[in-house]
Length: 147
Image 1 (cartoon, helix red, strand yellow):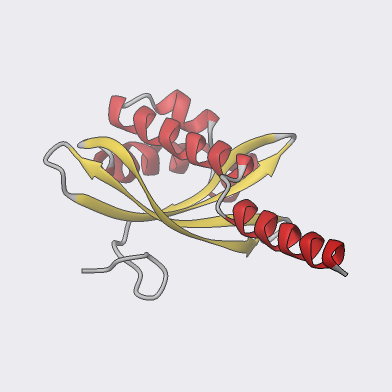
Image 2 (cartoon, rainbow, N blue to C red; image 1 turned 180 degrees about the vertical axis):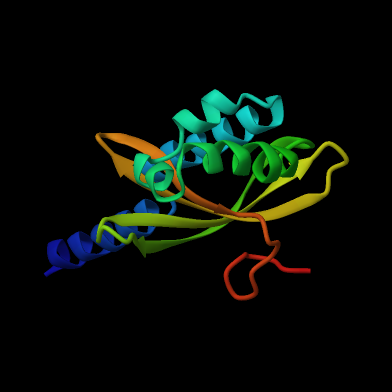
């Protein structure tokens, strides 16, 4: 009986330890968000476009995509300094029925202020790409902290 209790205790402890371990896929997706933000800050429209999912580009057209990236997305990240680690992630069903990941997150700008935004990522051909980005500010109940 002692061995059974020890086994149960070790199993429970390992579950708690694993619950706090970093998810490698989450880290990979966070790296894509950071790369997208850095490209936007630098005004690298071609790099930003390369990080967009083809379905998103087809949905709006090439000219509209370039205009949206240049006029809406790049200005949002103009003062980007560093991604913040606090985020809320939800699964998102894409129009093509593929599973995506909706990140409600923040970046710190050059003056240290946290800027909320949300971004949807999806896997395409083994690559993590941006399906959509919303810069409307903090979403109550979704962003970890709305002010």
